[in-house]
Image (cartoon, rainbow, N blue to C red; front, top):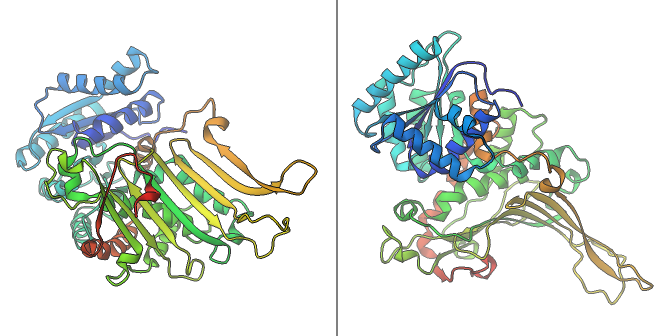
Length: 473
């Protein structure tokens, strides 16, 4: 892997002292810097209301990396910290954006000696997006330098909006500031190695595509299960809930990769269009069938968390049975399921094939001889296929066997890149493959919003921490 770019680049992180920056972005950037994947001329500018000097912020950055990454030398850490700066201020205050503009201009003049690329990363709660967009527009910071140098891009975390209407409003506002090619809407699940591999698995192997349809597949189950709770993010979670947090983005993007048509080639525009088409074909869940197709729950103890309402109706678990209204997938249930405080931390896609029409099996064998394909996204990235074979011995008995591929086993000397490393690397390169398009976001919200509108028609089921997801019903 080469450097993401040869051009001078400045990365501005709004929310530079927040959880996302501390736990994900700064370690990912350090790893990219250490391995020389970032541009040679690269600066990171943290922006937050927290009281920091540049020196104290650099210590914050160093502590964040040392706590989470151990395979580095003091020299490597010092070299990274030296490219980090800080601007303090309130996102509501115009003075912050003036200070930011001055700092970026100084970088161009005294550090880079050129008009550098500007990348704005909104690592803040979604309810802050509109405010920051407005202030960026008023400040002129989003205007590129012009000519052949100095592009400007924006990275926006999920969820993008709260429903279809707010997503469309944000898109309209973004459209006044940036062209679509400048906007990178993040869904870091798309950057996970096993999720990316779905495309190769399906379309680079003649074995699976002929049976990848309603004639042969019984159902698809997409699960994101967490054994941890909300933690200290009570106010954040009260504003979103599980469905907005991971359903509208992570689960639907995985569904799109599983169900999309062959894009023909590895082209960002074609891939995003293929994903969008599947999402647009999702059958709406109406108020008449929501009780049949939707389950929601809340773990015991959630209401005891700071900033959570005593009678909170926010879901920490959901299960949705979705259907894709097209020729390939008509009638196949896609079960989307996610929750916190469940029995294990796991993200996987399970594709269950139908029983064979006829089976050359012993008469007394009453097993259901289904093949099951399992794509495990985390914690152990792997792909496995359950099939049936004759059991060794004198009698003719069948038993299940498994063919499997594990990244840990095959890449023992190569660490898998973190999803945020891939997100940042691709954004600097300008590659949109792993980022959601306007059409994908709109189609996702078009499916999710009616469910949110009719949540009240389903009972909020309490469940004990450590419960198996399948037992919540």
